[in-house]
Image 1 (spheres, rainbow, N blue to C red):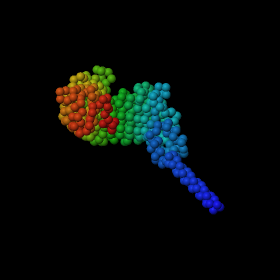
Image 2 (cartoon, rainbow, N blue to C red; image 1 turned 90 degrees about the vertical axis):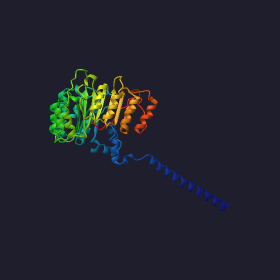
Image 3 (cartoon, one colour; image 1 turned 90 degrees about the horizontal axis):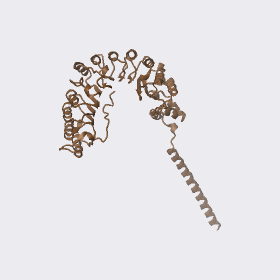
Image 4 (tube, helix red, strand yellow; image 1 turned 60 degrees about the vertical axis):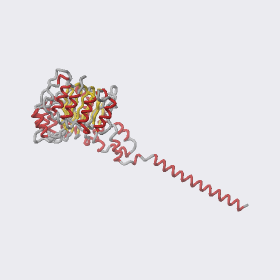
Length: 437
């Protein structure tokens, strides 16, 4: 009996020890599982945190910097502020989240030596100018002033804007990219830009700047021989400018964008650029992307496409006539991309066929409110072949005929493209020129 009792007690003790060990083992496993499920965010590599912070708006960066000491250290790393974007909005009217001006001032004060990019999307242009005026010790590489509500900067007193911009031009000394669309910048301020940044300026985008004259932009081309990308309104384009960009001292231009815009039909006079000027320009920069945006009324196209022009990317934002599109096929042999947003009620069959015949580099086409017979469209695609990497055609554009119905055209076009193709059910924007200014 005693021996049996001792045996039972031993078995009971052994069982309790086993249970206790099993419990400890499960506890260790649970703790490890918790550790795996809840990583120590404070011990993340700073390079990883830095990459995450670069995608955050300024306010979110500031909030994240309060999480722990490690994140706060990343918040103050100079590399984080080489790209600095801020939004200045009137809270009562803006649908964008505002960045508090005081927070911007603190960041500029601490990181001004490393600030390389300012992108101001704003309704409060006054506040933006106040911030630009503070960049006294800041050597910017790029400056972009982008308006989400117009007229914005144009509503400011011209002297106030010019004063703020001059602070940037004088203090930067190494400005390489400048985007100042829809601003009251003028010729004297461009001379200040050239005097301080002529050796470094590579990109200039300044559409809709009414106070700049052809002489002002010519001054930039004459002095900034490293300029590779330029975007401006057509009224600033001149034979003298093209010849200046074609001089032996000037580097080969990579992108030239021209906006041809008319706000009031019949009230804008458009000058003609000589063919010899275009010839000299393309001889000097044979690989340049020449992008032209037309926002004209039909009767205003007379000065254009009368002789060969080296345009590569062509956009018609308003209705364009059959006659103009016919001239495009005859005068644009370098054409790579064509977008027609609207046309009259007459089919564009002959015009598309002519473009396919003459424009051997055409690789992207977009057609909106136009009409093309299914047979002509199939012939156009057949002539262009597989080089059509982008083909965005509204279904309403295609008119069924005796040869092809809408159901048949899908298969026929897909066969000639070498890939599956369907017409668009709604407008699609072609982005073949994202690299263009």
